[in-house]
Length: 324
Image 1 (cartoon, rainbow, N blue to C red):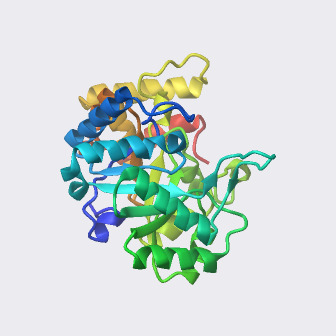
Image 2 (tube, helix red, strand yellow; image 1 turned 45 degrees about the horizontal axis):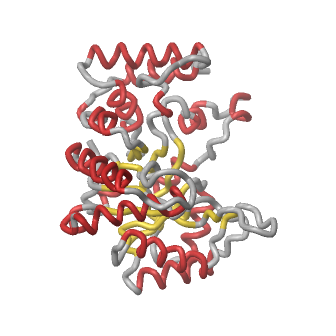
Image 3 (cartoon, rainbow, N blue to C red; image 1 turned 45 degrees about the vertical axis):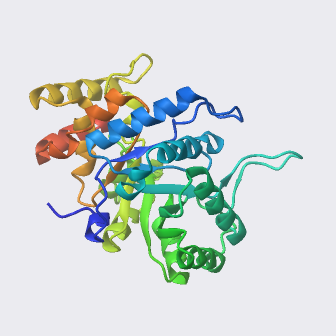
């Protein structure tokens, strides 16, 4: 099988990434407790035992506490830094007093200040990857390029990427930057399968209802940009979460996943991730959980082989309607 894009760039990252949004307690200003540090240690260890060496953060997660508690783990286990890859994101700002709303900010000053804050909370000298979190309508690509260049020159960030962007937005940023944007992180799962529908609905009325940006997967494949999937496990609805109130399609899909897992002596999580990873664009799933058992349940996803017929069976079942 062809290596996924980051591996093609000789970056020895794991195929699965651990999303760290759940670390650090609640989404408020309350201080980190020892229980949060203990949880972070356990989650990191479970990830390492599963073969995961890449960890995904964002400056906003738990209002900075996710990075802070992860930094405490690194301080207590300093040998880990040289063995793992750390990714974080910036660009989302919370609402402030005087009626200032939540907003996006890709100004050079905000990007530079955000990275300094991320590094301080993590207690590290550099990030392996920095992603711009959500598209800023006021984005000036020249200004972003200046920030990117400064971060790279000073050694604070090694590689750059984006999150939740379409092909045109990435191409615009790239046109002004000497440093490649090598990652795009998007919501993708067996239940969020718009990325597949975009292709099969060409010249179909159903295309009007699809929100996934047309041509984005093809662009990333042509440019060797790593596609990362956030929420790849569909919030657990296909792997054991209560299905009360869910549609018949979701319930039928969960049943099929369970049947395939039993047939292949695998977990439901492994089946769901294997479905994503079979796509030729080379998707890298980000598992956002603090449940150790769920992390372990993803361990064998790369070993699962789905036939074309099994892949399509899962997709068409999750669609709830036949292909056009």
